[in-house]
Image (cartoon, rainbow, N blue to C red; front, top):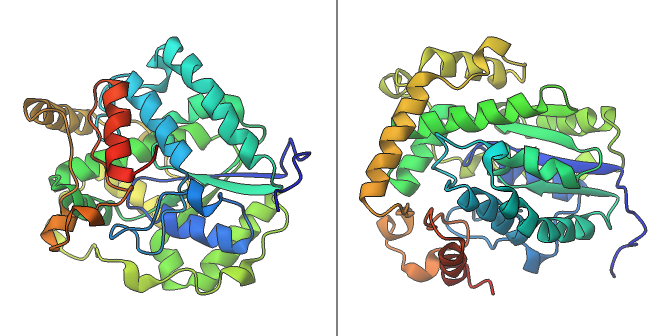
Length: 325
């Protein structure tokens, strides 16, 4: 049954932010189990080898994020020179009807959750279509994130760490003065029941009603975590700023404001990486499916195979890799 369309101003707009590979899918899945609406199955990116339990990520949100980024000559990995305020007004205006349409679907529900890692970079654009959102920011050890990107996309560890820093700083800077809950992914994995309880309590304190933490028991599975930050040599790759950021976020504490600035070293790393990718055609492919001996049919919609130029070409590649029309 279609929900009551009269709920134009929902009691619970939940935005889940966090760097790619940070546990945002697991947290959004838990929120869905607790009663937050994320979308009909056909509206969500399908499960794949990347996320066998599901992404809980809307196809239209992914398309919107790609549109905004590509319209500014950026991409999920091309962020060194990106600023949401620099997106051409013509791009924002052209995508606004689709953004409003997606929000109209979500706002038919009293409580909903929207997750897309690229929104860490794009909340200044999305906020125009929101009423009173509450943000859940999910943080995972940056070395684990970088290791996952290395395995999936063949990124150097330094590049993955730099991307983690950019996404984290941009998201935290945006939510600093807004209602939010911090979730440490390792703490959640160590004790899922307690972690889900803290999440539900935190959202309740922000005015989100109706979530049932008991319904999410069993939704968090630690055995799906394939990266572990235990190698001293890899831990030494982190910059002092990244170490300080993570030390706070691991304990679900707010970082020192002095660390909420993207470092020059990180920007230099990303610029060099982007120049290298430009020389190779400006496309980033996921490699893990082939590494594990799976064919192209296993390459699900979560894969980031989109080029940085030409929105039309991006849309064509997106349809080819996902089957979305």
